[in-house]
Length: 247
Image 1: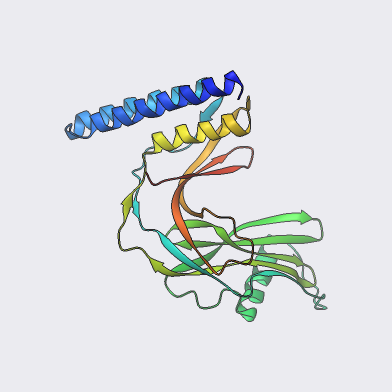
Image 2: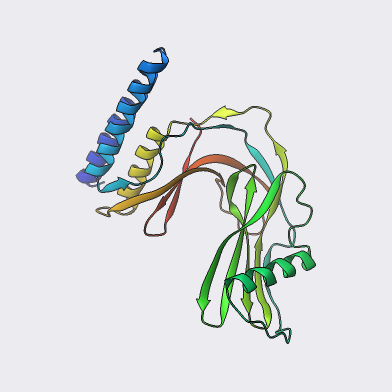
């Protein structure tokens, strides 16, 4: 392993130890002192990130929730489906594409029985070519996005031409809700990921949220799996990184 990589690993390990030490020091303090320690810890963390080419332009002032582990049962009809033109003649724009996609997936029963566990929201409508739009739906447990769950519909003026489905139901939500690692610790893990995967890259973090992700990639053959809470960091270059949020 190159010395520069070893040095980066040692620096990040020391930073993580320092963050954990400061975080533990803050716990016994009163509310005012604790708030001051947390602000100092966050400021120091952001400074370290900036020194390594990562600027944070996102809200960091929220408390991490306590969340359970989820057991997912993947749908048996997940896959990609192509459809012949329906003979329609839609005036195509974002609104009409979304309306047609909503009609189509309702007619097909795409999401099955959602129940109260997972809800489907349209998260993006993107124009792939001048003559079609791609409508993407994502799965949410409570208000937290599950990375692996999505349905996309390619909509043309003649209707939906293609649907790609990767969906699941929650069969069990763990009874125990565990606290997530602090956002400061997650940010340092994010920096470690960026330095390892994109050495020398400059990043601007534009969004920070809590989500769920499955540790093993879904390949279409797995019937069930487990989803764990994660910190999600969205960068201005369009890339999102998920950092495991359990200690």
